[in-house]
Image (tube, rainbow, N blue to C red; front, top):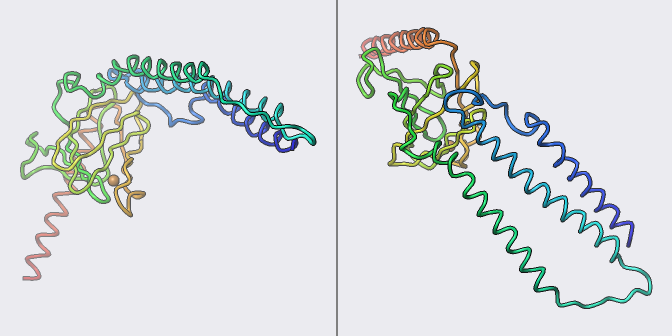
Length: 267
Ligand SMILES: [Cu+2]
């Protein structure tokens, strides 16, 4: 029936509208990007790739939807109409196999520079890791070097779901997992890296705006996956970060004193 073809054509027009609107208003469909102008501005590169792929898939999508709408309308069942049988077109099949393959090869080559600057160890900034981030069901355990400036010593500072650093400064963290696969995901930084049990994986990034951002797990890691959510605080200056570190360290020492006094009391 022709009226049904109209319904499907309207659905296609609505989806095409969404596609056409999306590249002109990225904040509508992607989290705000805080890594556009900073020294490690992967955010801008990743967004460029997103939008490029959106244009390619969008144009193909519009083309196929127009063809679909035309076919629905042109070949809708009509009283007295006769079905015609066709074996298809081999030439058409070759064309629609070669074009997508060529597009895929192009994207694979085009993104290589961005991929290597985010993932290749040779691109890792030569700075001391600011923290060790260990994923476990269902928390991010974060360890900073304490006052001695060294990691894995008695005076380390431990926080849960709370990562701090300074804007416009390259940040390196060491990512680990205690149990299963997790994925360290900073949506506003366009950074995503699996945390793999048994491996220590360096991850680097930075931000150009101070503020609070999300740290979430992007790998379905168990029943509590949804609550594996942390906070990233980007400070304006090193002084602000040092003040926060000192305060957190004082709070940790105090709770340790209280805890040890509690144990002594109960003995
Ligand atoms: Cu997880």
